[in-house]
Image (cartoon, rainbow, N blue to C red; front, side, top):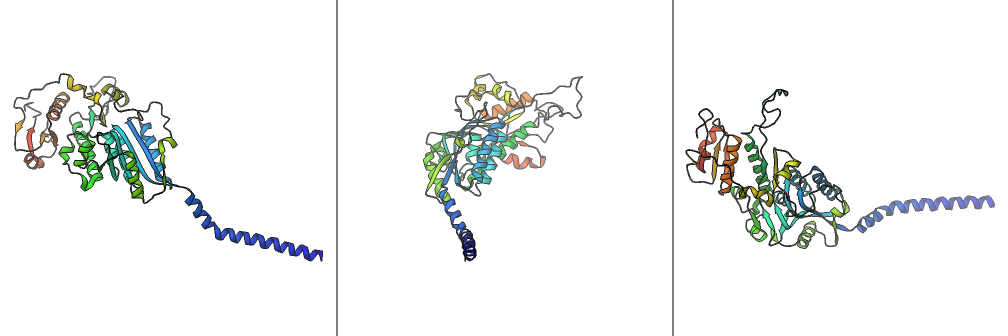
Length: 374
């Protein structure tokens, strides 16, 4: 009798274990769903303040973008921008990274003070852009520091004429021209049909107030960060959410960072920049301190025939297809004069383009490399 009771007890225990296992197996998906639902939806905000000049600053911002991309609870991203830009390669990478994330999660930009040059480059990667009425928007363009001229020395042998410098001084402006073309093309891609400004207008690098920027399609609406967050939630299709500042979740520990500093408080001039990236260097940057060259006497180059007038148009055409022989000082002075007088310029690199280029040109500049005449 006692053995029968023990056997019955064992059967009961095994049965309870089996029932518990089956019940757990059947209810696990429901429990999992409830657990997932208990994690609130989030709008992740990324603050981009100040300048992006160091590689560590770029890595930090890319880390924040990756965090927003990989965390499923974050349903949309808001870029909180108050930046005058920085080194060009950094904003190119940030632009493409945000565009990639925007394929899976809505991205909205909010301009609270300044989105100039690289700052606007980043804003243009967003699906929708807000700006406060008196914020500064635009300044689309690049600033380039020419490579230094390298002279042969007896103690150093180089296997090619550009081995030490890496650049031909006369062709470097062409590379700068490519940099601004890429910038403008990416703005056009980001804004699409909402953009009401021509490439030549954008290349003038003007800064607009937020209300003006809306009229030419650089932004979508005049508004605040709160409106940007609401828009992001609407695009993501969520109503119950919390806002997470990702910069607080992942703090920036780089001690020399130029992020989180007011663009107008940092005396960012050419000597400061050259200390970070010696020439040649290309920046998508706006800084009032870089404009001090306007108060200094310009190196004037007198061209005997001046700029020869051709047909009406917007560009000054600089010929590089006719063995042009501009020195560094000449090309710097020429481009400075063109820009200060409110004109745009482009380079002729293929003789077959001559006729089409001249159709839309105001002036044509060519220098013969043999006679050194203009």
